[in-house]
Every structure is written in C-alpha cells, then in structure tokens.
Image (cartoon, rainbow, N blue to C red):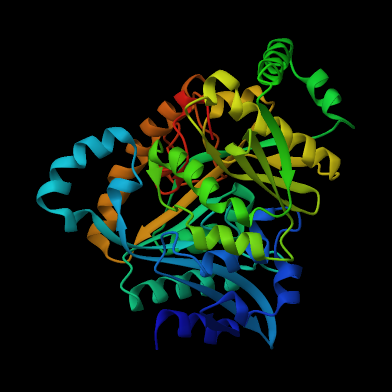
Length: 420
C-alpha cells in the first residue's frame, strides 16, 4: 500500500487521476473554478491541451468522499525542462559552458501543480480539511514518482490558498519560496477618464502624454476584435519579438494555442490590436470572467514600440474594455513592474511550495534556491522590492529571504524594456 492509499483509506477519500479536462463535467469545472479569474476559464485549459507550449502532458488529480467531488488539482508534466530557459540572464550566462559541453545536465523532469499560465489554486467546493490536504499532497508525490518527475512545485499560490495545504506540505518536506508577485489594477470609476483622474499626479501626466504621443501618429489606430484568426501569422510574429527578448520562457504559446483560443466559443476574449495602415504592430489578448479581466499576452513591433508608446496604449485600451464590461479588476501578470505600477497596479503576493522526491536533491534545492531567487527578485522589482518580503503565516525559515524571482515561470519581457 503506497502513501496515498494509506492516507485515503484512513480518511475516506478516494483519489482519481484524469488525463484531460474533457473528463471533468463542464458544470463541475465552472462551479469550482474561480469565478472572476479568466485564466481559470475551461477554454484556457482546453487550449493548453491542444497546443505544444512546453509541458509534455497534463493531468487532473481529483478527490472524492462518499461519491462527492472534494477537490481538483491540475498538473503539468515537464519531462525535459531546459533550466537555461527558465532562469534569469545572469544564471544563463553561468550555465553557458554546461550547455555547450553537457547539455543533458540542464534538462530536468518537473511537475507543476496549479495553473501553468496563472495563479495557483486547488479547486474545491469548500476549504480543504487536514485529511483532504494530506491525501492530495501524498497523491501528488506518488504521481511524481510514478512519472519519474523528481522536482515538484505548487506554482504561484497566494498565501490564502496555501493555508489549507500548509501542514501537509510541511509534513511532506516541501519548502516555501516567494515567486514574482502578480499585478492587479482595481477599477473603481465609471469611465476611463475617472481612472485617469484617480492616478497620482505624475503617473496621470505621464499617461496623458503617452496618449497624446500615440494619437499624434495618425498612421496608427487601435481596434478591438472578436475574431482574429485571419491575423494569426502576423500576431505570432509580434509575440515572438517579445519572447525573443524574454529572460525566461517556460511557456511559449504556439499557433495551435492561439487558434484554439480564437475558436473557443465559450471563452470570453477580445483582442486589442494596433494597426499601422493594415499591418498589426501591437496587440494585447484580453480575457474576461465574472468581474475580472486579464491582459494575458502581448505582442510588439519594436521598430516603433517605444516612440509610439505602443505598450502603454494597448494597456489603456484594455482598461477601457474592462471598465465597459463592468469588471472590478484587471490583471497584467508578473513582468515589467515599473510601467504597471505607473498604470496604478498593486503587487499580489505569490509563493512556490517546492520539494524533490529524493532527499539529497531536496536538500540541495532547499539550501540554494531561496537565496538565489531572493537576489533575482530584488533585481526584477528594483526600487519596488520590499525590505522584508511579506510571507504566509508560519512560513519555514527557508522562505524568509526578502524576495525571489519567478525562476519557474514566464517573463515575457525584461523590466527595462517597459513591456509585459
């Protein structure tokens, strides 16, 4: 009897493993998923499964008790993750000789728990009790061992979402490391002009200046599209320009993902596109759910991005869209903090819970990662890095470093480029 079976037998929970979101009834997913987080829309997970954006596979751990569904945890399987693609530029330079001489050493099998593209959650109709959390964590580790995925990461969980799992994670030798914060703009006004008026004086002046400079470029215009399949080749080219400048590329969205998003009828999405004549030169994909919106992915033509203030103006268009849709907040992800804070965004604290299924690699990870990630996050946040990072209550000592980079995550652009 393995650890999961023993814990399940004792608690009365039953573990099931599903290999596709299609095996979960649609009404169950919609009832459990965060109502105001577009990155948890079923169509996003469907698009991921239809594409080749990084993971070698997906799975969904479910817990049932007395026939009732108690929890769902999405999993992403990376059998051959390239470390040099998910670390920062300094670490990549240090790894360059290894990449040339022994490239296999940089390929690591890894299991991510949560949402590859968004904030992590365990989907459940109520707060998990200690027994459910223990069975769930044991099931994750058993699955990782069976699939030969040594490193296990609960990715980008907010403190409140970690709380029900904390005792089970600690008992299973997980340790906490702060990840890059998300960015969220609260929308309180009735119009875009209300939004501008609520900004502090300097950001407000800067915003009006950027809007004027964009409007002075008479060859440029912004449109909002429901259908954009005919533009996909050009949009992908703009997206790749951003990805070519990215420090980390855990998930590079491919043409199959974009086509699936375009074709998913139940996914609420709009595309903000800036045209130069008939040629797209910038875009921001916007997703909506309940009272929430997300600027999910961006593309830019760097030939004129800075001079025309393309980055800021597609974000202003997204804010207008979200306000018109009655949204109370919009998120813009974990990169380029200076321009997003100037937009009025707040930082949303997030954490990794990490371990390795073998003791020696686990000890190495616990010793090296927190300090390295703290230094990287301090660099990413610059003057916005807190002197002492806030942490979940009772966080272990390994999580006490001041900050950490999103070493296992996706950064579409370096902060100095003032883009996503």
